[in-house]
Image (cartoon, rainbow, N blue to C red; front, side):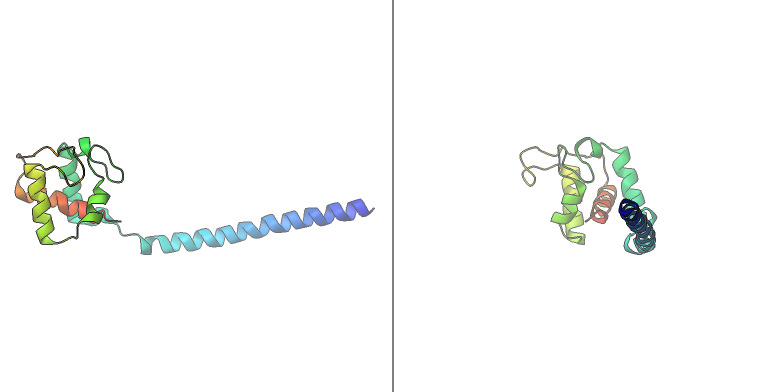
Length: 133
């Protein structure tokens, strides 16, 4: 008879523990879901993001760069972290995109992109700065 009481007590404890977690998980999920939109900024609505992404996609940028990880060149997020988002840095980096460069991120040179206008190169840099962590 004791075995039945012990088994019943264990079963009741397991059911209570499982049932309690579901309610807590549901509350936690709801709280996380409700808080997520407030904490996340939707970059896709930003015109600088849209235009920059379009320019990156139609040029050869993604051959050497990725958004979050180093490829041949640095990750865009690393570039955004390294430089402050100022007009002077936007102009300087746009110039490097057009003329090419070497030495800041290692020995592999960045190829020049003379076909890009100054405005388009600056738009790409503005897009990169929006990716800052």
